[in-house]
Length: 301
Image 1 (spheres, rainbow, N blue to C red):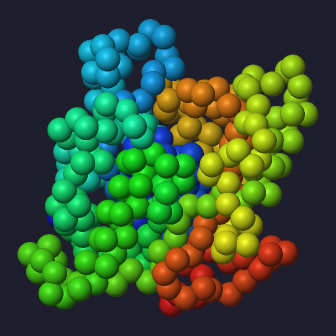
Image 2 (cartoon, rainbow, N blue to C red):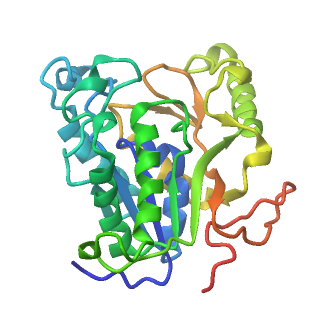
Image 3 (cartoon, rainbow, N blue to C red):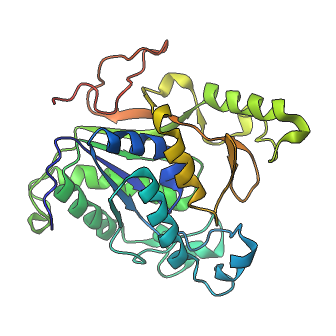
């Protein structure tokens, strides 16, 4: 095990391959470029995802059920595009299976992440936290952004690991205790979602995707006043777009927009937003809202 010696360290906990790029790809690329050690911990292989590439349809869960292995390769290509070299799977690749959407039969599969023993899963995450010793950790909110069981479980595992990793009495065999200084949840401000909806509408019949719909019907949009941090990584927009294109079984990218299997168009964002839920808020950046402009704002060094 090679010690992590970079002075600043960022860890992200995500449910499936591609979640990291959609939510945090530009942020990850920016911090890699700034010399931050970026660690991605992915909880499943995304075996239950729909396949958007017709010639790969046989990989789907209801056919050969080989999509998970294929998505490891997609994730590797995405990480290469972002410059991230430290990416891992919770408990090892394939330890936990994609649980599918809430209320589906996949929720009850024996290896479904939704059914995972939480204490065991937290221990796997603690081992990574104590090895990497991140000052900052990023994951989802309590609802996983939009209610997906694996996102909710990833939230529980990440938050549980933050608590347990700091406890000197917890599993000394996993390494010395480590206190994560700041924890953020991904956040998509309503104002940003509304801007994307308007941009899609302006394309009219030229739009490559269907409209996202009414703002009040978008499950992942949050009030602007709960957002605390805006990371401007527009200088790394091309890296994020390349990483998104590295996940072709899951998303289609067309210019400044992308869509998942629902074909609902969303903006490819290179300025990404967060909600600080643990730790001290750093000084305000230049945004009118007074948001931080750096996940490490206020931390020494």
